Amino acid sequence: MTEKKQQTLSSSFRWTMCVMLFFATTVNYLDRQVLSLTYNDFIAPEFHWDDATYGNITGWFSLLYACAMLFVGRVVDRLGTRKGYMWAIAIWSFGACAHAFCGAMTQWFVPEVSSKAAMIEASGNIALAISTVSMWLFIGARFILAVGESGNFPAANKVVAEYFPKKDRAFATSLYNSGAQIGALIAPLCIPPLAKAFGWEWAFIVIGALGFIWMVIWLFLYDKPAESKRVNSLELAYIQSDDAAPDTAAASAAAAGAAPEKSIGFFKCFTYRQTWAFAAGKFFSDGAWWFFLFWMPVYLSSVYGYTSDSPQGKWGIFVIYFICLFSIIGGYLPTYFVEKKGMHPFDSRMKSMLIFAFFPLLTLFAQPLGSISFWFPVIIVGIAGAAHQSWSANVFSSVSDMFPRSTIATVTGIGGMAGGISCFIFNKLSGLLFVYASGTTLVDGKEVEMTKDLLAAGAEYVRPAMEFMGFTGKPAGYFIVFCVCGLCYLIGWMLMHLLVPKYSPISE
Image 1 (cartoon, helix red, strand yellow):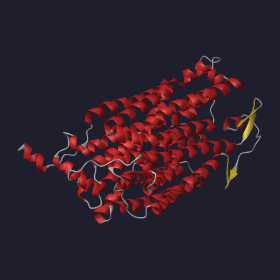
Image 2 (tube, rainbow, N blue to C red; image 1 turned 180 degrees about the vertical axis):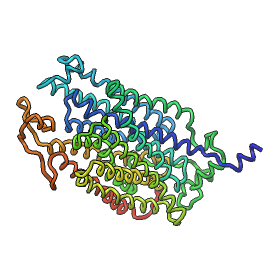
Image 3 (cartoon, helix red, strand yellow; image 1 turned 60 degrees about the horizontal axis):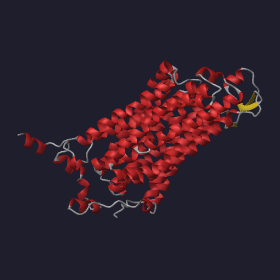
Image 4 (tube, rainbow, N blue to C red; image 1 turned 180 degrees about the horizontal axis):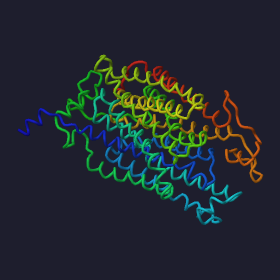
């Protein structure tokens, strides 16, 4: 009876794997968010940082992440999904915890200060030394974090390609990718209270330790579908249902008993328009998303005065990422087009991405409406973030549409590198723009960024605050960046469509 039941009921272990990817991505984004939620209110006063310093740290993280993505995807393909994912999360969890020791290391390198209070009270050259040394120590910790985190999406994308047929991959990707929103949603509710109660160092340690717990569960659960005792024959047949399709010749050969597909060479990947199309989709979208991720807590604090541990600050960030959860609907849209409209999976994906590309245009109105209430930019950025995550689920799935499984992580890494370079440009230039927009004043004979506190204390401008389209100071800078974010997705879609106008799978 039991055997007969197994033959008529399909197992659903693929969704367990999707849940594992979801939790890995949640931890991934929690680790990224610790710095953005502790920077302005806890870390900056201790280390004498300004927005340019923060822009340097987030910018270097993005660049290091980009460089790592170029190679980590290849490493995941070589090591295999099980070992590749395990090493990725082990490295990034260690890197997350390493941030906690940057304060003690700064005191060691700057012997003139021996306590946190002494660092806060420092001025002149000592304050400059503290700022410079701590910045590079944090960049070192971010380097470790970047190398590990760069393995998450190549490995996760590879798992989705192993466990789901093409028509379901965007939906599965949107489900695990919603971990980004959940991580960002939980972060403002737990990280500032942790930092306030125990110190910012413990926020990094506690959140970083979550990855080690995930790693143990992963080693217990994961196997390839054909080798997993938790996947029965019916579920395996469903997972491999693409093998019978006429446009998957390599898979058909494998199903017929031919030799396993060969991986496409690393440099050979760069010769395909499909690789460059994916890279374009990532380059013109990731910079905007990471700007929202890294700068929105700072935006609410510096423009509206709502710190990350204030009720308004917490609820503002919570609402942004709660709205982003609706991106799951966007992941289902291609499945709807395939099943209800009879469209090809690739065509349904491109049509869905075009729809999502229009929503970020709302950010053009974020700053103008922000003069009425801070809730307008919060809601608008939430909608743009949901559109991004829907876009992201489909752009990731486009790789498994066009490349063999053995090369998916490699191509994902190449596209991730393009996205990381975009993030570096966004974060570096945004930090410089916000400092420039603020204007400058003199403190102890040194020209520094004008702040609200200095202005309230009677400081006078040396260089006046920037004015643009009716906005003055940092609001003017944020208005410019919001406008750039709004236009990026349509540009990215047009380039992708220009490079790959119709479905063109790589058959080598």
